[in-house]
Structure formats: C-alpha cells, structure tokens
Image (tube, rainbow, N blue to C red; front, side):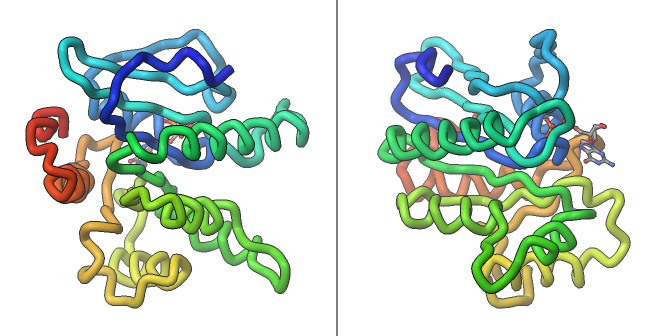
Amino acid sequence: MFEERPDRDAEVAFVGRSNVGKSTLMREITGHTFDTGRKPGVTRSPNHYDWAPEDFVLTDLPGFGFMSGVSEEQREATKDGIVRYLEDRADNVLVAVLVLDGKSAVDIIDRHSGEDEVPYVIDMYGFLQDLGIPTVIAVNKMDKVDDRDERLDAICDRFGLYPPWQQWQESVAPISAKKGDIDALNEAIRHHLHEAERDDLFKFF
Ligand code: GDP
C-alpha cells in the first residue's frame, strides 16, 4: 500500500489524526481538488502530489487514530505503514508537518497521557525528531479557538516546547485551513527549506 511513490528526491510530508483538516490543508496548499472517491478519513495509502519537472513531492500520509468502521488491526497497520514510510524516506523528507486540531488536541493528548502511555501525536513528534526530520506542528482550526495564546502555550507545553509559543514559530504554526489562513505554516516550512538550501521550493508554499 505504500509503494507507489513517485521517484522524486525532495519531499514534504503531512501527518495527522483523522479529521484534523489535513485534506482541507492539502487542497489549500496544492490548489488541487482531489476527490479520491474514498470516504473521508479512510485514506490508507499516501497521496503524492508531484510537479514535473520539479524534483519535489508533497505527501499526504494516511490519517491515524480512531475512525468508525476501521478495526484496531487496520489502525495499527496504518501506524506501522506511516512509521516505515518515514524511516525509509528520512533522508529525503525536508520537512514534516504534523497537523493538529487546535480545538481538541490538548484534551486528546491529556486523555491519553498516563504513566506508561504516550499519546500518539507526541510519540510521532519524538519519532520525527529522532529521525532528524525538521517538523512543524500545524495547529489547525484556529478559527474555532478563542483563547488563542493559552491554547498554543498548552500545546507547546505538551510537546516539550517551553512556552510562550511565540518563540517556536518555526515549529508551531497556528492556521485555519478552511479559511485559507495558512501563512504561518508556509513561513515555517520556508524556514526549514531555506536551512536545507532549497529556496527553489519556496514557490510551493
Ligand atoms: P482530514 O480527515 O484530516 O483530512 O480532515 P478534513 O480535511 O476532511 O476536515 C475534517 C473537517 O474539519 C471538515 O468538516 C472540514 O471542513 C473541517 N475543517 C478543516 N479545516 C478547518 C478549519 O481550519 N477550521 C474549521 N472550523 N474547520 C475545519
């Protein structure tokens, strides 16, 4: 399921739980309307967007976490697939974008935090760090959040980024994909592309 990747070098990969607005964000970035005909949230193989003749691909990894109609076994297989994909591609993934729902992320993280339980998004963030992949946490649906600064500080805190959030603008980007308000994310991605000496890819963000 993960083998149809185009043969491109540079890559920006998007990961996130189901329903955080990842498809909406991908549409906003690519300008493509991609109706895969699949039920939202059940995309299990990555979608790749590549622009010939650029040596670049944007990858939408499958959503993970609870979805109705999806078995525990399938969920685990999806997670394993994501992990394996990122391990294989670690050298080429210039930036990973971990998309969160700003309205519910803290509650979900806290609900899954325990003595021997690490919430999956936190785990994923650590995993991306371990792979050496620069990661931007895109905090989506900010249009639904009224305590903006408090919420972003809480998210930083959960990810081990010392608040205030404003000092992490390369790592934490508040956005509203639905409203087309994604400048903070584009800026953060560009920062990492610049670090990777790939300013030529700015035109995509
Ligand atoms: P995905 O499962 O992560 O791909 O999520 P979708 O892109 O399908 O979005 C899930 C739901 O969240 C849809 O109803 C979207 O309209 C909504 N959504 C996406 N982005 C935003 C946003 O920025 N603000 C608000 N309020 N809703 C959003």
